[in-house]
Image 1: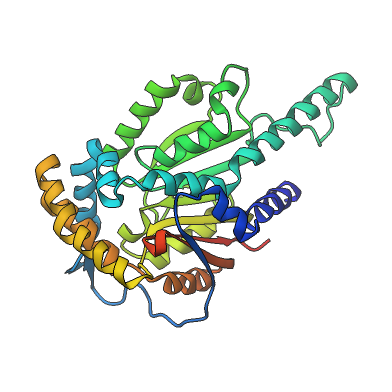
Image 2 (image 1 turned 135 degrees about the horizontal axis):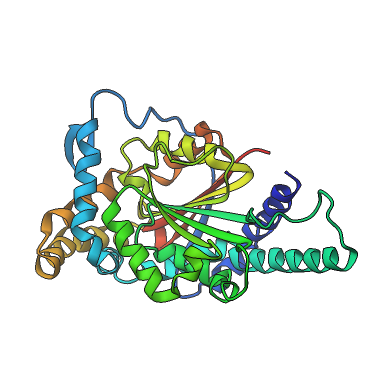
Amino acid sequence: TSLCRRIATTCTRTAALPRRSLASSSSRLPFSSAASQDTSSSPYVSGPTTHFGYESVSINEKEGRVRQVFENVANDYDVMNDFMSAGLHRYWKDELLRMTGVGPMSKALRRRASMKYASDLNNNNDDDDTIDDSKALLSILDVAGGTGDVAFRFVDAANCEERSKSSGKDEVNVTVCDINPEMLRVGESRARKRYGSALFDETCALKFVEGNAQCLPFEDNSFDLYTIAFGLRNVTDVDMALRDALRVLKPGGRFLCLEFSHVQNVPLAQLYDIYSFHVIPKLGEVVANDRDSYQYLVESIRKFCTQDELVTRMNTAGFEGVKYTNMTQGIVAVHEGWKPL
């Protein structure tokens, strides 16, 4: 618990950077911040049907249809993201990484582990305060992250590849969880080509797990950090996913969601709609021979929560300190909250 408190304190300091610092670190994009507002909302799913883009489908049908969309685009997922964001998704993910504080936090935890290990060796100390090599000091869960684009940023920021050259399990571990096995196959294949097998088989710094965001296959209080990028809007019941995110986080753990949202600037919103509905599906048809999947992805953005509505849902799920940060005038937003201690 004391370690969780220190992790939470580190993350809080990172999240509480002055607005000027946030803007200067990402000067290529316009940013604006908004605090949480107390607005009412009805359950995300009520009754036997829900939305699949602009189409009304049964609750049981949506999951299968979303699965099919991502099976269709798995091999071209990065290309898809480039289409959806005009390439800006790379900057948005970099900003998400910065907001998590994983880089400096990992460096501090590794230094602590090294100093403790050296002290124990010098003093022949085997008391209860000795660091357990079988347990990570920082556990990260990236949900709906099948192809590994966000997880690789965490692995690189935490210097896990260099750490894999040493013996023993890594003090930092990253778990990618996705409902789609085809996305996971692509992600793990990319990871092994990029890092080799040591991160999987020796230091256990990275793993890929199939699972549903609404009922994750992990024990309570398992992770220090939960991220989900461009995945929450595809979940059938967002409220259920938020409650399960809270369940698997440790006390003091942090939740961050990067998602397409609602543009605040009216002229930009009009241009964005033209690009979304007239360009993206056509590009999907030409490049991937799959107009329908890209049409769904465009429609799913418009059907998803507004920024303030998602704040309310997170508060209702039990998160504390909930707020959001708009990026690029609200084309995307990062929502964050904490599990109470």
